[in-house]
Image (cartoon, rainbow, N blue to C red):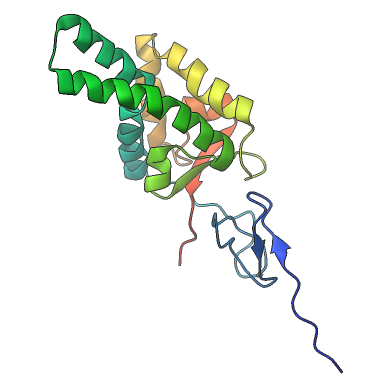
Length: 179
């Protein structure tokens, strides 16, 4: 009897080839369901403090940074601050969009080991839902002061989902498994 090598299994998220008995993708850490002790549908909500720190990191790479840089330039502020904020705004925004589209992560979420997934499937969220509903519509709604408070307070709910998570049908989960 000849032993056959184990066939590889491709990750549904990034298409990386993994050993057949792998529980997690070696590249993106997506659960593969190759083990009965860690089912595919177990996703751990991201800790509140991680989401806060990731938001602060992302804030520096957002349109807010770009607009702030332009205001500094108009007010004759320090040249280095202006240049830094402009670069962050011009480079950061496209980079965030690419990361969201490819990995379901922002720079902050990637640094802190989190990702945005579809609430129903647990897979990477649809680009429209994540970028347009979760970020752009949410940004427009922040112009309504009570909305900001309600959105941020929902992080203390048991499922740790904010209004913007509900808008887009997403949730933020830990990118790596718990041991």
